[in-house]
Length: 87
Image 1 (spheres, rainbow, N blue to C red):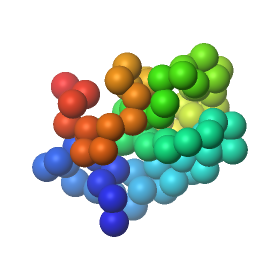
Image 2 (cartoon, one colour):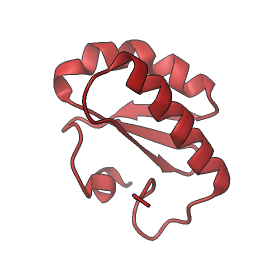
Image 3 (cartoon, one colour):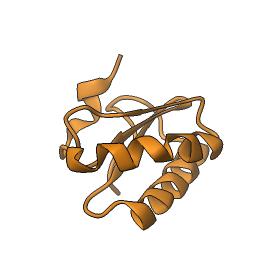
């Protein structure tokens, strides 16, 4: 299983469900590799920076899934990059 939260943070069923729903929604609209990382009720979207505008239009829809805060990782998708944005 690939990580959905920063190293050391517990992965809950709720987090897995939210991440799955968010990635499915985004995959319908944005090509390429997309990862949604979850830290508590915060989501970070990692995807090709070339699609940033498209992702920005989808932030509200991702938030409506149940996240309190949603952001786009400035560097895009990076394998093993979950800790690069951790507060």
